Image 1 (cartoon, rainbow, N blue to C red):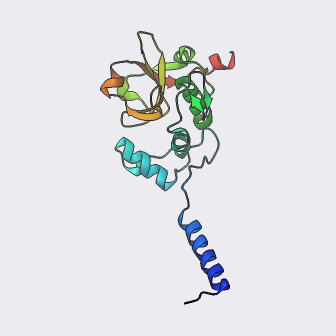
Image 2 (spheres, rainbow, N blue to C red):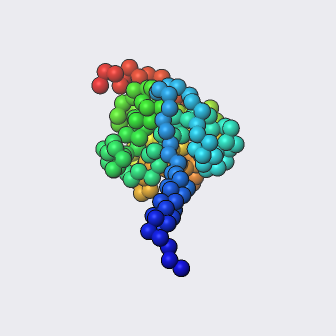
Image 3 (spheres, one colour):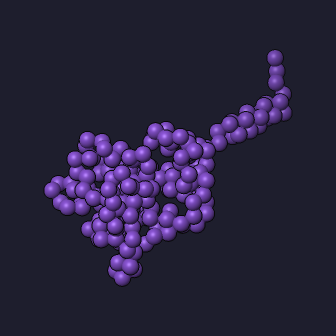
Length: 188
Protein backbone atom coordinates (compact mmCIF):
# COMPACT_ATOMS: atom_id res chain seq x y z
CA UNK A 1 0.00 0.00 0.00
CA UNK A 2 1.39 3.36 -1.00
CA UNK A 3 0.76 6.36 1.26
CA UNK A 4 0.86 9.65 -0.54
CA UNK A 5 3.24 12.37 0.51
CA UNK A 6 0.33 14.53 1.74
CA UNK A 7 -1.14 11.68 3.73
CA UNK A 8 2.19 11.11 5.48
CA UNK A 9 2.52 14.82 6.21
CA UNK A 10 -1.03 14.94 7.58
CA UNK A 11 -0.41 11.84 9.69
CA UNK A 12 2.84 13.29 11.05
CA UNK A 13 1.18 16.61 11.92
CA UNK A 14 -1.69 14.75 13.60
CA UNK A 15 0.68 12.66 15.71
CA UNK A 16 2.80 15.66 16.70
CA UNK A 17 -0.33 17.61 17.66
CA UNK A 18 -1.69 14.70 19.69
CA UNK A 19 1.68 14.28 21.43
CA UNK A 20 1.94 17.99 22.27
CA UNK A 21 -1.55 18.19 23.78
CA UNK A 22 -1.14 15.02 25.82
CA UNK A 23 2.16 16.05 27.41
CA UNK A 24 1.15 19.20 29.21
CA UNK A 25 3.32 19.52 32.27
CA UNK A 26 1.86 20.85 35.47
CA UNK A 27 3.71 23.83 36.83
CA UNK A 28 3.28 25.64 40.12
CA UNK A 29 2.23 29.22 39.58
CA UNK A 30 2.71 31.92 42.21
CA UNK A 31 -0.51 33.94 42.20
CA UNK A 32 -1.31 36.98 44.28
CA UNK A 33 1.17 39.12 46.16
CA UNK A 34 3.35 38.31 49.18
CA UNK A 35 1.10 38.11 52.21
CA UNK A 36 -1.96 37.04 50.20
CA UNK A 37 -3.48 33.65 50.86
CA UNK A 38 -4.66 32.31 47.52
CA UNK A 39 -6.24 28.97 46.72
CA UNK A 40 -3.66 26.40 45.57
CA UNK A 41 -3.87 24.60 42.26
CA UNK A 42 -5.58 21.24 42.67
CA UNK A 43 -2.53 19.11 41.90
CA UNK A 44 -0.47 21.12 44.42
CA UNK A 45 -3.08 20.72 47.16
CA UNK A 46 -3.34 16.99 46.45
CA UNK A 47 0.43 16.43 46.41
CA UNK A 48 1.20 18.23 49.68
CA UNK A 49 -1.91 16.93 51.43
CA UNK A 50 -0.67 13.41 50.73
CA UNK A 51 2.86 14.20 51.95
CA UNK A 52 1.58 15.71 55.20
CA UNK A 53 -1.29 13.30 55.78
CA UNK A 54 -4.05 15.92 55.67
CA UNK A 55 -7.15 16.48 53.57
CA UNK A 56 -6.44 18.47 50.41
CA UNK A 57 -8.98 21.07 51.62
CA UNK A 58 -6.58 21.78 54.51
CA UNK A 59 -3.88 22.92 52.08
CA UNK A 60 -5.14 26.49 51.68
CA UNK A 61 -2.09 28.71 51.17
CA UNK A 62 -1.36 28.41 47.46
CA UNK A 63 1.60 30.83 47.61
CA UNK A 64 3.30 28.73 50.30
CA UNK A 65 2.92 25.37 48.59
CA UNK A 66 3.67 26.73 45.12
CA UNK A 67 6.87 28.26 46.53
CA UNK A 68 7.80 24.88 48.02
CA UNK A 69 7.01 23.14 44.74
CA UNK A 70 9.32 25.50 42.86
CA UNK A 71 12.21 24.91 45.30
CA UNK A 72 11.62 21.24 46.19
CA UNK A 73 14.75 19.19 45.52
CA UNK A 74 17.03 22.21 45.02
CA UNK A 75 20.45 21.10 46.29
CA UNK A 76 21.98 22.49 49.46
CA UNK A 77 24.75 25.02 48.99
CA UNK A 78 26.21 27.01 51.87
CA UNK A 79 25.35 30.71 51.37
CA UNK A 80 23.42 29.77 48.22
CA UNK A 81 20.34 31.74 47.31
CA UNK A 82 19.23 30.42 43.92
CA UNK A 83 18.03 27.24 42.23
CA UNK A 84 21.62 26.04 41.75
CA UNK A 85 21.88 25.71 45.53
CA UNK A 86 20.41 27.19 48.69
CA UNK A 87 21.09 26.91 52.40
CA UNK A 88 18.55 26.62 55.19
CA UNK A 89 18.49 30.27 56.21
CA UNK A 90 18.37 31.38 52.58
CA UNK A 91 15.32 29.21 51.97
CA UNK A 92 13.65 30.60 55.09
CA UNK A 93 14.59 34.16 54.13
CA UNK A 94 13.12 33.84 50.61
CA UNK A 95 10.03 31.91 51.73
CA UNK A 96 9.08 34.47 54.38
CA UNK A 97 9.66 37.32 51.93
CA UNK A 98 7.92 35.87 48.87
CA UNK A 99 5.07 34.03 50.61
CA UNK A 100 4.27 36.07 53.71
CA UNK A 101 5.72 39.48 52.75
CA UNK A 102 8.04 39.51 55.78
CA UNK A 103 11.66 40.62 55.70
CA UNK A 104 13.82 38.70 58.14
CA UNK A 105 17.60 38.49 58.55
CA UNK A 106 19.48 36.33 56.05
CA UNK A 107 21.29 34.07 58.53
CA UNK A 108 20.07 31.63 61.15
CA UNK A 109 21.94 33.26 64.05
CA UNK A 110 19.97 36.46 63.46
CA UNK A 111 16.68 34.82 62.50
CA UNK A 112 16.38 33.43 66.03
CA UNK A 113 16.13 37.03 67.28
CA UNK A 114 12.96 37.86 65.32
CA UNK A 115 10.65 35.23 66.80
CA UNK A 116 8.34 34.98 69.76
CA UNK A 117 8.78 31.51 71.22
CA UNK A 118 5.94 29.04 71.01
CA UNK A 119 5.34 25.56 72.26
CA UNK A 120 5.42 22.90 69.60
CA UNK A 121 1.65 22.30 69.70
CA UNK A 122 1.02 26.03 69.08
CA UNK A 123 2.96 26.19 65.80
CA UNK A 124 1.25 27.52 62.68
CA UNK A 125 2.18 27.71 59.00
CA UNK A 126 5.09 30.08 58.50
CA UNK A 127 6.57 29.77 62.00
CA UNK A 128 10.32 29.23 62.20
CA UNK A 129 11.73 26.01 63.65
CA UNK A 130 15.35 25.88 64.85
CA UNK A 131 17.73 22.99 65.40
CA UNK A 132 21.13 22.59 67.10
CA UNK A 133 23.32 20.47 64.82
CA UNK A 134 26.97 19.64 65.57
CA UNK A 135 26.65 21.06 69.09
CA UNK A 136 26.01 24.58 67.73
CA UNK A 137 23.01 26.51 69.03
CA UNK A 138 20.52 27.46 66.34
CA UNK A 139 22.64 26.17 63.48
CA UNK A 140 19.71 25.08 61.28
CA UNK A 141 16.27 26.49 60.50
CA UNK A 142 13.13 25.41 58.71
CA UNK A 143 9.57 26.63 58.29
CA UNK A 144 6.63 24.90 59.96
CA UNK A 145 3.84 23.80 57.62
CA UNK A 146 1.07 21.84 59.35
CA UNK A 147 0.35 18.49 60.98
CA UNK A 148 3.89 18.34 62.37
CA UNK A 149 5.74 18.91 59.06
CA UNK A 150 8.59 21.29 58.28
CA UNK A 151 10.17 22.40 55.00
CA UNK A 152 13.93 22.93 55.14
CA UNK A 153 17.12 22.72 53.08
CA UNK A 154 18.84 19.49 54.06
CA UNK A 155 22.61 19.38 53.58
CA UNK A 156 22.29 15.88 52.08
CA UNK A 157 18.98 15.93 50.23
CA UNK A 158 18.30 19.58 49.43
CA UNK A 159 14.94 21.27 49.91
CA UNK A 160 12.51 18.79 51.36
CA UNK A 161 9.64 18.26 53.79
CA UNK A 162 10.14 16.21 56.95
CA UNK A 163 8.13 15.34 60.01
CA UNK A 164 9.35 17.50 62.91
CA UNK A 165 9.21 14.47 65.18
CA UNK A 166 11.31 12.36 62.81
CA UNK A 167 13.96 10.90 65.16
CA UNK A 168 16.84 12.09 62.96
CA UNK A 169 15.60 15.70 63.26
CA UNK A 170 13.72 15.88 66.52
CA UNK A 171 16.69 15.05 68.71
CA UNK A 172 18.21 18.35 67.48
CA UNK A 173 15.01 20.42 67.81
CA UNK A 174 15.78 23.53 69.83
CA UNK A 175 13.23 26.32 69.54
CA UNK A 176 10.35 27.57 67.43
CA UNK A 177 8.16 30.61 67.15
CA UNK A 178 6.32 33.22 65.14
CA UNK A 179 8.06 36.11 63.46
CA UNK A 180 7.33 39.29 65.36
CA UNK A 181 10.34 41.55 65.08
CA UNK A 182 11.21 42.37 61.49
CA UNK A 183 12.80 45.69 62.55
CA UNK A 184 16.07 43.81 63.15
CA UNK A 185 16.18 42.80 59.48
CA UNK A 186 15.36 46.34 58.35
CA UNK A 187 18.37 47.71 60.26
CA UNK A 188 20.97 45.26 58.93
